[in-house]
Length: 214
Image (cartoon, rainbow, N blue to C red; front, side, top):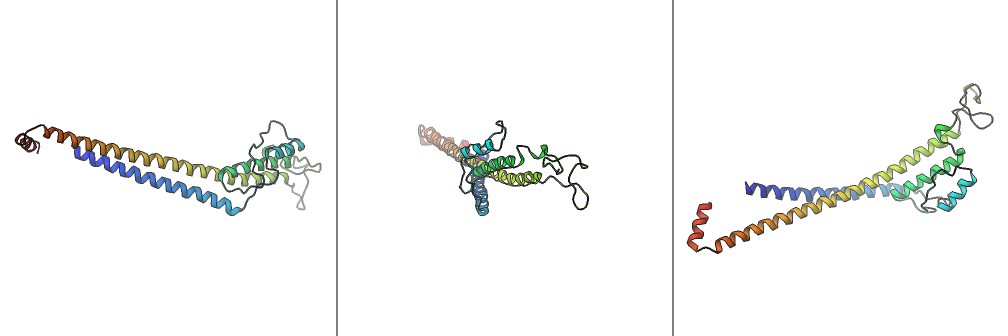
């Protein structure tokens, strides 16, 4: 039974090391894939993507002071990491709010109107050639912004998942190595105890003990 436990311990150590190494490799591959994909898009932060510049723009556009503004400077920087992609998405949202007068998609009227404010009344809306009410074009700003920001935030999420995989991989690897050290130390200690046990006895007694143990 003792031998079975020792074999099980060795197998567990090996599996922890293998799974830990695999998790680290997969995490690094995922992280590199995210960054390579972002780099391929050649996205660069616009000159106004700094806390000072965006604050001035938001004030000039009359945006409410309650709107949270980005605090990271990515002006003229290549967007090649998940963190930068997330910040870029934050600046995009402010740009969209500036374009729509501080209202979001759900707050905007559905149809276009002559006064430019929009309306939810199809009878008061501008009509197209077919006689149907025209959609509020300003809502398309939010459709585009939402699509792009979702992709950018997905890059941020994917990079963090990859980082989590790397951390877990190192934890499994160190745990496997630790178990292996403890297993080896326990086996060595038992071996030394056996040697000390038989070393205190005469050869005849030791031989008798070995036969009895077998």
